[in-house]
Image 1 (tube, rainbow over the protein chains, first blue to last red):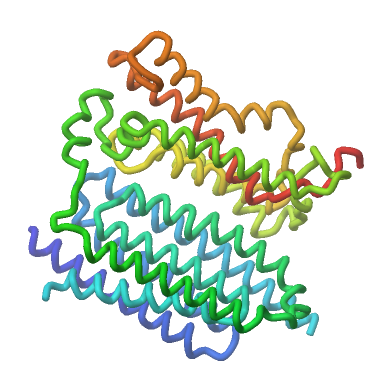
Image 2: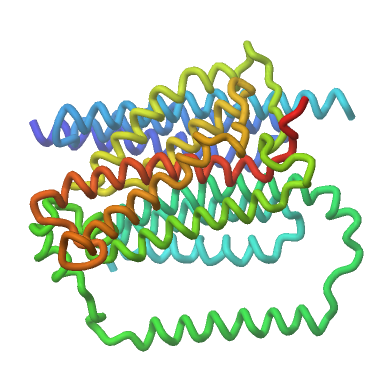
Amino acid sequence: MSLARDVMTIAAVSAGAFFFLAGTVGLLRFPDTLTRLHALTKADNLGLGLVVLGLLPQAASLRDGLKLVGIWLLGLLAGATVSQLIARAARHGQLNR
Amino acid sequence: MSIETVIEIVLAAVVLTLGVWTIVVPETFSATVGFVAYGLLVALIWVRLDAADVALTEAAIGGGLGGVLLLGAAARLRDADMMADARPGKLLRAGAAALSVLTAAVLAGVVLLLPDPAPTLAPAAVANAWATGLSNPVTNVLMAFRAMDTMLEKVVLLLAIIGVWSLAPDSAWGGRPGPRHQADPRGVLAFLARLLPPVGIVIGIYILWTGSDHPGGAFQGGAILASMWLLAIMAGLADTPLVSHRSVRFILVAGPGLFLLVGLAGLLFGAAFLSYPPALAKPLILGIEIAMTLTIAATLGLLLAGAPERSTEP
């Protein structure tokens, strides 16, 4: 049972790390603000989600697990809001130019 | 070399690089962003050192509120950046560099010369935790063993807010700090400012409450409460209060005031200034912490809101 949990943790955290890596590469390589935001939110949402998913089997109690999920939800909320605000500011800046 | 050591070395190298970059980069805005990232990474270093209390404070103050403060300063300086042809003279810059290098060298020398193992009072602090009934040694040191320092720290915060207020023009004295923020009431920011504060307020209170036995406490909880307040202000859902208002002034002095009263009561009825009667130690400390959390939240929020800009008359 513990082996299955460990395998799930390793697989999910590795997949999460991959999304963070891909998101960072996209952030550095993509040409404009909107595509860079696209790359960044993939890292935040999927990457963090997969890392949290991977850590859930290792959580000592239900309470710890719920805290982890709470962190992911707060991360989602913050990421979605901030990227909307940045995108709006970027579009505003383009119109004014 | 274990994987932990590798991570620590990489972390230290990144923090050092970011520190140098923050100093070297010409634009104020980039330097501010660098400083925020620096604060968050330093918080990770504190976690690696098992100092979760310090890490929480560093993330909240160094990365969060300090970053917002610097961003505001950078926005104000943006116009000044273009006008500032008059760079400081060569002699002044060489002098500043020499002083900085000297300070860094002395600090590095002192750290390297520390006896190994370094002298520590940590075992004594842990061994005497029974005296207060709280099991978080950091809270014990802050609120009981070195309570005097914590009280004076709160007085310093009070002095800081008086310093910020004294920058107000005569016409705005006693008025509302900062501009009135306008945002689309049906927009994303207003949505977040309605959704997040209930969660944030619960987390802030939880961090205050859990601080007696786990990492957390008045400062970290207060910082979270302050950021929720600022979010509502920035989204235009709330306005900054009149700084001349009696209730604002009362909240600002509540923390240090209650601390001082309890301290004086210790002088009158107990053994010494700030000595708690053993039976009442935990309730007294919690009471002071609750008052301090409110004071810290109000002080940090008002520090970020800035000097009063709008007079009391419309």
